[in-house]
Image 1 (tube, rainbow, N blue to C red):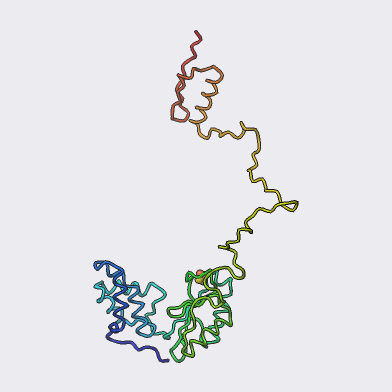
Image 2 (cartoon, rainbow, N blue to C red; image 1 turned 90 degrees about the vertical axis):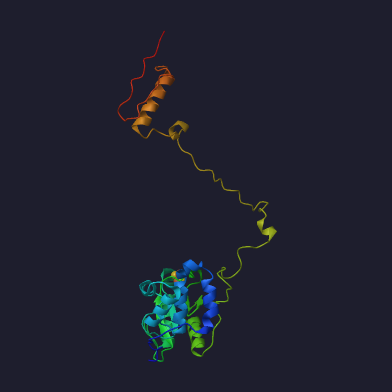
Length: 271
Ligand code: FES
């Protein structure tokens, strides 16, 4: 196989300087280490799909951060390869929404077209095929992520067509391959329609009466009252009942907040 070789020295190509400056401009100078992920991405792309240790070290020096921190990032995230792989990264999402929409067919299409299985690189070192967890395009499932582009709304034939085009050296149009522009519903539009007549209420003998959406209330009103739920509340309710019945004066009612220890109410003055 002809992978990009391991190298002892690595530095960013001059052509990447504008892109690097654009990335660094997003962060305060004292926080430029925050650019580690996009710079690793650039380094991987420059080096043909994988990151030799010299590239990791260069990113660490470039961002003035400990090498071990760059190694940690590169070895933690799935999108970085620290061993040689094919240059063109083909990732098929196989998480549940894509799987339910047929990602097995997309894996099969990629495998048939590229002649490799998941986790393998093609003999010519051009392609690396792997499966991926959700890539955030579930509403256009199933999908593939190839280098920097998403290809969505795939089926077996569409996936084959995309990959065959890339094999020929073409760059197929990224995005949904179904004719959708984005993630709008298939078929007729169902939202954002400005047809006032469609919003008019139906009239005449065919109109359907509005359903009564009032919640059904069962039982007598007094049964629906909130019941005491604690010893303190029970004591209070008990004394309220005594005040109502005239057994206690409403000015001498007192309830000890400690459950089971109620203060003795003063006897009602009957004079
Ligand atoms: S499950 Fe495939 S993009 Fe989310």
